[in-house]
Length: 423
Image (cartoon, rainbow, N blue to C red; front, side, top):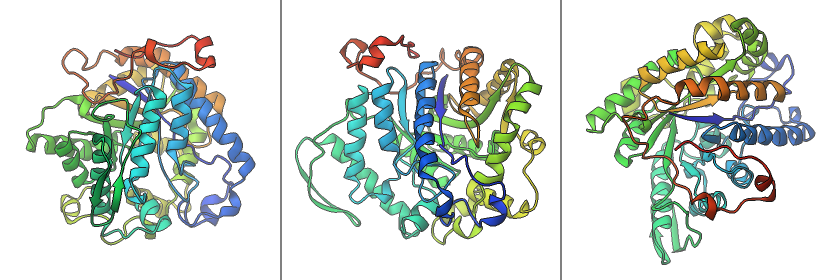
């Protein structure tokens, strides 16, 4: 089993009346609410939290890309990943990911991912999301009807740039380049493992199977609401004749751990309510532009998480998302280490998923609480789940870094004790 520490980097200083005075946390969020001095604090403490998770023995640390919002302060995950690549030693660096269709030319991603893989000594997991409609269609102005075609072409260009040693011509529908020459190549050959973050699109399932990539369900609403998506993914793998290797799939779950359930509820009540009240407050007009969702996905009636968030935002406009509902619906798993481990084991087996992405910092959670949550999970939960699937299946989608003795170590890492990575 692999455990990945995921960070959204939310803006924690939203005012108490944010939801009632702002139409959306995304796209049109009031720029006057963002304080650069607070962001200075957040970026640095959030990077500290990611590095701390690596020190605690998590198999990977994860960053992602969003634009024009207070939900996640990461317009450039590659900048953060480069920092993590230098300041960590064994944990994989998972960029989940860079929205390929937004880059002109996409060779920018080929070069930056290659840099990160070189800095880290071959520890990059390359995430290639299509991107949310808020980020891609509204903040960055991409035509939703051509978004997926742009994405596929960009993907093909990046893969070819990594594989060819001589300059070549690329003449696509959206990208025309006389000289493609990605001179910096990844350490990992033929390329870093590719994971595709998704929210339930049928086309994403098909794409992951056809390309032999990991499908990563980045879930807002926990294991209860994820059944149709995860079962649908495995049905598609069966249709394609793929094996049921659980390492083909990754699933994200919010988690809060303390010595007792009562203590956990006390600790995580406020950050959980802050997240579901404010961070998913999305104007419905931004979540489903015409052409963004294909006919196949509509026919399958696979629900959009973003649509669900917007719908809940409107339905609960005058009602707080309280902890009772959050727990009852499984949005956040809160409890003692033994209780959380038992539930996560059940979820992993039920969904046949070998990669668990954990959100152990969410909402307006303090750094002290995030560190406590991270350390307790690493010491008391991970050991109870580590054995899952290892004897039966090989993880073919995990980084293959340079040998430790071949890797450069910064002075800080040379002086610090280093946790051994999972075999």
